[in-house]
Length: 268
Image 1 (cartoon, one colour):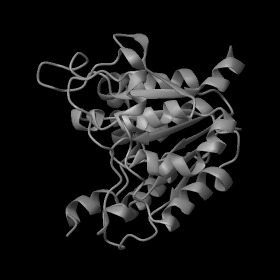
Image 2 (cartoon, one colour):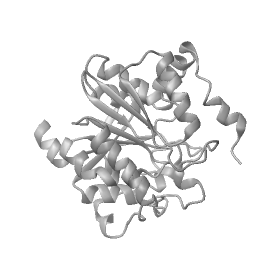
Image 3 (cartoon, one colour):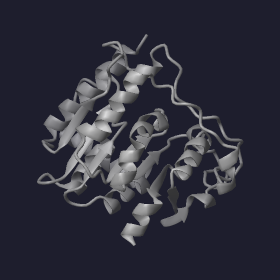
């Protein structure tokens, strides 16, 4: 049974001051490098997509960078209480260039679960052995599990990314706790053609440990990854989950970004 008090919290919009305080705290502490990456990579007039919008903080920072005149932000959410919350939030903050996309088809009306968590197997990846670096040589051994989304939901995300959102898409963010591969794989050809940057965020060591299969799959598609640590950018090959964490196990790296090699050549 869903927690009714938790669900209710997502139907009541935060005040402007409360939300902005949370957004600033996210910028200076919890996801400083992630928000910093958004502000560096997005420009006035860009189109950005948050495929796991949640409480809307990342979509808010996207909206500040792309501008209200020409820029567009699409906040996609797959849980109905959060969809209602996001729509109220966009109205409260007067963000006409932010569109909330309801991807909750298939979930019960009072559920705070994604469609594939409601009695279905979640989309996950085979966990990596702790302490291993993510190397290019892992391509033959680390294999992601097949996406667990049913065909109707795969079609939904394909339509969102290929038809609903105007192109070119500059950046797509996905939370690693929500079946990232299953959300982007249906439209990977379109995203590659756009030269879109793929940004993945992680909150726990367990999520990071399970990323290896996804990252290997992206490398096979021609993407190159990186991360930021101590205000410096590093290639993905230098990441080590044991080295980039606090003594208590809290990850110090919470976001990874990928660019296609052809997009890198064009930018250069």
